[in-house]
Each structure stands twice: as structure tokens, then as C-alpha cells.
Image (cartoon, rainbow, N blue to C red; front, side):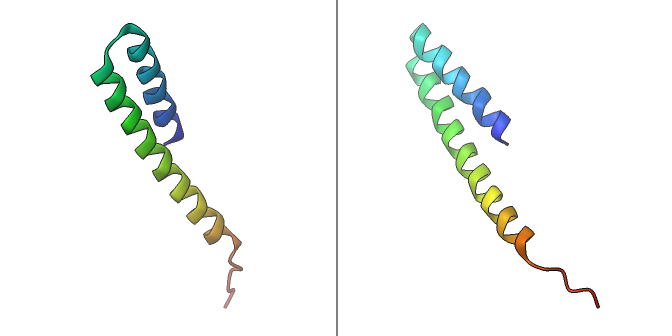
Amino acid sequence: MLNYAIVFLVIALIAGVLGFGGVAGTAASIAKVLFLVFLVLFVVSLIRGRRPRLDI
């Protein structure tokens, strides 16, 4: 997930340098959304991983 966010960020930067404002804005928005999804999943995995297992 983080890899895709970085890829879209790079696409946004390159498109911005080349003057494609619409493509750069769209790619930057997608990168933001993917990064937020990554953060949420990361926090959930941290919380879930800390629970002790109940061996019955």
C-alpha cells in the first residue's frame, strides 16, 4: 500500500514539473488517500498485535 502511495507521489511530482496540473493534482490526491489507508491499517495491526493470545 505504501509503495503505491509513493508511486503516485512520484507521478504527481513528474507531472507537476512537466506542467500537467490536472494529472498532478489527481495523482497527489490518490497518493494522500492511499497513505491514509496505509496509516489506518498500520495502526490497526499495531493494536491487534499487542493483544495477548488466549490459549484454551
